[in-house]
Length: 444
Image (cartoon, rainbow, N blue to C red; front, side, top):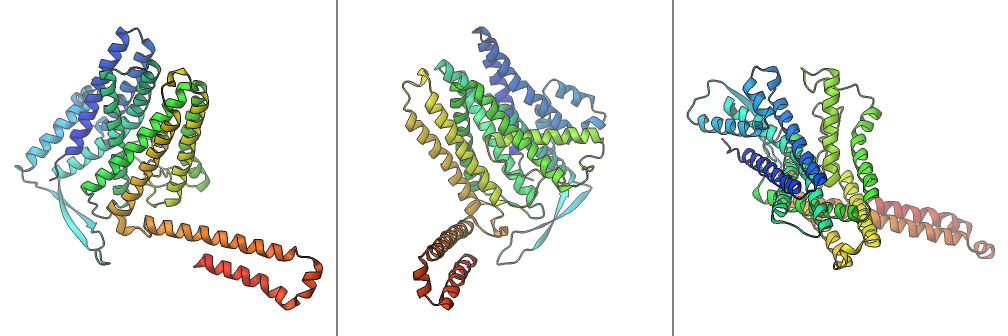
């Protein structure tokens, strides 16, 4: 049975970040910074409450008679109790024989063009551990993007305004960044397992390292860009945040309304229509929060029973990173034009170049992951390199076709005397031949 390391990592980040937030808020209170204290507590306690609700919802504790568990969750001690329960199950699994087992069927990754189906016995203890891992993975994503991400932005903004960073705030920001990166990593793994549910997915250590570097560069540069822009244009950052948030929040609902599909009723049997709507709104809220800071790796699809689109859409991925790069460059340009005296000793062009290179480095690690370390790369219809080659060919074909049309236009603009000298048969056949050659090149 697999060691529940992901549960331990989630609980450690949850406890460490909450403790650091409480300590930092006490320092703000002693220093007379009431607003910073209130925001620090808000971004710490709100995701804590959402994490408790997530753990209760996944384990369906509302419909069971477990008053002690509900009390511990009200006291914000639910993750600690769940972690203790997980390790009790793990330690007892090797000593207790399972009276009932279930059989799952998974397909192996294709080898030499063949894919075998394997059967595996899953006991009750392993099934409970799987439920706990799934619950903590979702809790880590919520903690990361509804708590740690705004918390890291806030603390870095305070450090920029005060032009001073304390040891406690530095430690807290490092914990927040690790929590966001870990949440993004869990989001990647969760997306892979949902999309390739019928396959036995095994993620190698190098894949984890590549995802960690990809997400670290992407999130760190994004947060720094937002903080720099906020420090000089406080009023305009509200519009930037609202445009980003509502674009990603409304996008799944617009696709759902355009599809004409009926309202989903099979998310949870115990939920009413109002409860289902609340759950879907919360999911789109989390989806928007993730995409505010990094690529979500999952595409929310409300009319799908799994709520996740299982298709690999390279075009959407390309559009997201292109638009995000343009947005970051624009925000940095605005910061450069309106920077204040607090950046007197900062080399602004060098900082802008470093941030843009850092974001490009994140994209590079992403491409390396999909090209070499993705656990299901054998199932892709085309790899990253093949898609890039096809894109280059299409661009070249478009350029040749434009040149062909320009040359045709030049021949049509010749004087009438020159056009009368050329035979009518050659004049008719020259245009289609050029167009056909361009079309053949593009189809090739």
